[in-house]
Length: 357
Ligand SMILES: Nc1nc2c(ncn2[C@@H]2O[C@H](COP(=O)(O)OP(=O)(O)OP(=O)(O)O)[C@@H](O)[C@H]2O)c(=O)[nH]1
Ligand SMILES: [Zn+2]
Image 1: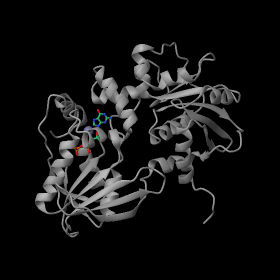
Image 2 (image 1 turned 30 degrees about the horizontal axis):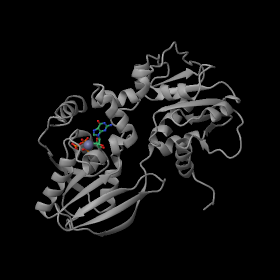
Image 3 (image 1 turned 60 degrees about the horizontal axis):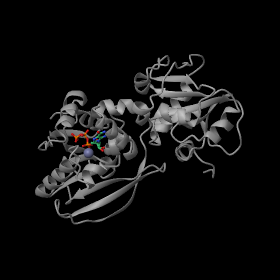
């Protein structure tokens, strides 16, 4: 094997680059876009980038709807950056926190020429780095040495494919609610966050296992937040597995339905202004749900399970398991008592996200 980075390694490197405010290059043949994330772009780097050509920003269709930007590229909008605009303008473009106090006003000059494919790929990359989906780029044929250069086609493949995970460690773990168990840690090969499997008892691999796919919720799981149902669902699932003497709980680090804790807190700030959980995600430029549930099926398969009794109210989780070849022999509802703070959130989950509550 070559010592040089694979595309997957380059994509991992590009995520870090974007997070620290470095540009990356997306390249296809003679065409290339040098691109930064709006959230982390500094004025100094922006000036250096604009010396190479006119800068064009891009946002998702959802963010464009909020900012009243016309969408000519299907699911994304490209906007020519005004010559007097700087890093602050880009932050306001990206971050709805500014929408109320300092709303970004048009008119916006939408870019309609050329391809949107590079900007679209850059937006996907920003999302996968858990940054706000807003980017700014300059079309180039040459760029400074030392930047991460991503081949377009292979990068898109990498972003769309399920992240391969490998087991790293496992050990015995006695738990208050679930009794005797083992905690298994799985690590992706692309520097993304690790995921966990909690095996309760010693489930028989030849039978459907009582399973829960739980997405991380720092606020609910750890702080006991009353805004959602995550904490009681986590504890409820562990208790039921404890009572049954066996089960497997997959703890997927997909905080905030895959947008990360920082963006979830941005969404919570919007919810404090009166937007619901789905509207808040959209105003940030995200889909309602950015999670990749394939990870769950992959972990179960790796642990030797082929069928599950799945504890969930989310029909997407059931569909994904079936599509990924893990048979769901039964859906086990996981209903918790609502409280004053999460009742409206649960209504939205039922009405907009199709949860069977
Ligand atoms: N973006 C966003 N994420 C939220 C909000 N409230 C909770 N979450 C996240 O939503 C996810 C909920 O995960 P789960 O309970 O596993 O999934 P679910 O879709 O509710 O499905 P089931 O619980 O299986 O029925 C967690 O990642 C939470 O961090 C919110 O207002 N905004
Ligand atoms: Zn939660």
